[in-house]
Image 1 (tube, rainbow, N blue to C red):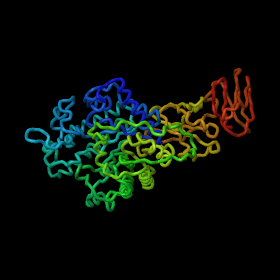
Image 2: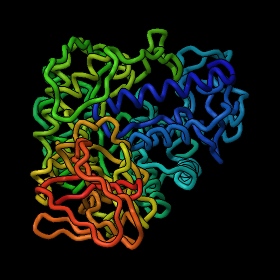
Image 3: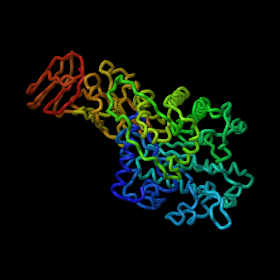
Image 4: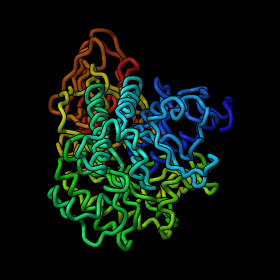
Length: 582
């Protein structure tokens, strides 16, 4: 937007809510939200100015905190919010922010690498980006502090770095001569030094997360080809995938994701595999299992980043009903305006999309095939899929339906980071159903909950909680709205489990069958299909079938008893409702 007004703030909020509703409609469980595109901020930063992409001018307060808003709205829907940062990029076009607030090129000239070629008179001959110099320790400290500031202020689920390190255009041997002269060890090759600079930054960020908020998951999304040098791979005990050709990012942008995995400084890797299964030289069917194997070798996760920039969706949803009732979604979810900021062209393509837009247009089935490869390639039950960019989900209701109907047919939990020290959480108590609201009690803070609808004939069967078809979703609070699932009340029993912020889940418990947990001064028991209630005071007792048909209503004091067939019932005592199993 060009200025800060109440109307424009509302538009930004509606835009993000539309995105989240599309993500929820597709049964996806996490979003990566760009919070630092050009050493600026979509949040209240202690180190960097408000982004010009929000208020039109760098440093302009947008009138609200976008990150706080997006976290709150994501968590309301049980969706994880990961902060997406570009670690080094300062300007997508040199001098874009000349004279603006926090112009690091003026404030810290030794921090900036300018990839523009200038004429003698100082005008641009060839435009280029500017980045923070990875070789400067002050830059590394800034990035570390930025992440620490984010973690201390916001309830994030993860932090993800984009693939911008040294520039894709290539870095001359003299461009960073200032930092070379001060910081490059004698005898160390320039390439090794530059890779080491990036590796140290990644390690510093990971270590900061572990010190400040270790449950926050950290990942990086590098270019989809690590290296084309056989000798480099052999030195790491790896064999490169056959037939893969293309850019060598190990040398071009000094990106070494294998080192991050080997050093244990990321929780997952999400290489940008922006090619199709029919690509020549960059075959998805070869790159996907290779990356999955590398991540598994170092006991980390692999989530493939897949491009849907060239997607043309033609999916027609079948008319058959699903087992779990769905909310009614519009035929075509609200279309967002194409994003033209951040160096994008009027066509709406960002710079990353420009790099992959040469790909042939492809249909839903290609995305589905790549998802299948993710699933068949995983060796640690972490078949993640990251779709870039989100606007292709939001502006294409057919694609959203395709994912929901064909690939992401049920909600799913994000893979647990189980290699870190984590607490053992107690089972939620006092689980109760009042109307369409499921609620429970828990003494623990900073946790999440998983909600299940278990068929009545499977109640008590342990495998009920490993069947994804029974999972309804995740809650960040002590309640869950069942308005979408009223059709399950007669056939299913609801259960709630505790899940820590690392994603480790603990055994769920069913809706309370113990009246002491819900009603005060009431005791009950079940014996031989007979319900016994001890009432100290005169009380109105009502029993209903699970679908709401009244079976008994009685005003009594002392002992109440009623014989019932095996099943699930609703019991109301003095207006308070609880679900019981006989």
